[in-house]
Image (tube, rainbow, N blue to C red; front, side, top):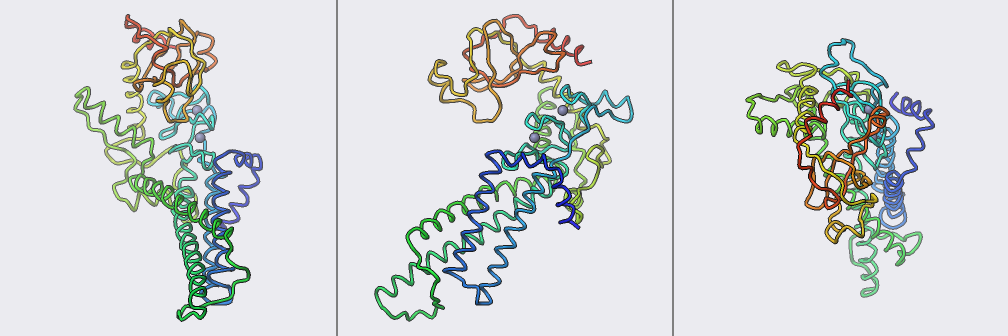
Length: 410
Ligand SMILES: [Zn+2]
Ligand SMILES: [Zn+2]
């Protein structure tokens, strides 16, 4: 049934374009190299198919590959689930608790966020993953996490094969060189072809890939399973942290309870992992802790947004900037300390105004203040720029502008 539903999903053929991106190309290449090398090494040199162990080993390797690809493609093609364009809550009054997405022309349902890469509001968004060239969210969270578990397991098996192949082949070569007759009790078989320098190099390369994948993907798995056990997403971990900061900063005495934690790890786990493969819920309404209500989190997000606006500082552009990641003429430190993120850089021209919300010593991140027409067209220019290209505005007009922006929001 599962396999059938996976095949049906493939009818969305236009989704195949997701494969044309560096992430899936590299990921699939690594999977192909590791699994084919593990299978070749086993059959030819280490564990031939005519032994029982060899056959089991072979079946296991095929199994890993199939399971890994199954979860990988499902994570990519099922996708996270998107909030319908122009979505509104059933109860008109609830709109006051929700943020409005100007791109999707609809309200953001609880737990959803707008992804700039997917250009849609994503259900229970966790993050946009370049390796699957899609968002990880409500519908594919389980597939994604299962992939993160299986990939290191498969790679560990492959790494074992690579190490044993190299070890036994080098060992048996040494043995025959020195003794001519091997006394080792090990099973010696006659490989179909000799273990050449090229095969050694290929095996070593595959071993590097397998070990690297095990460590990197394994770490991601632990991060994901930790948040799933608390029924959170990586973004919500961040929101909760900011909520605590905000409450401490303003000493409001509120207590923020994360609403979606159902109190038991098993219950939380079952929300994401089900036998059918489809997670619980419609991706819009969520079961919440009894002390909270549907909009506990969205209200907190609105408070944080307002707070960010108050705390953002207005800057005037004093130097043009062409939007280069590592600009050559903006000083040595600006060049070297460019922020390591996929977030965009924005072009600046003298006289423009910017609201900065965060920054490093050499770079800042903020929103360009746009004219009426651009705002109406839902244009938003947001990104990084060198700190030396801007100058703090002396007058404090942050509040004025945020008020007028609020009007436009409505
Ligand atoms: Zn949106
Ligand atoms: Zn996305």
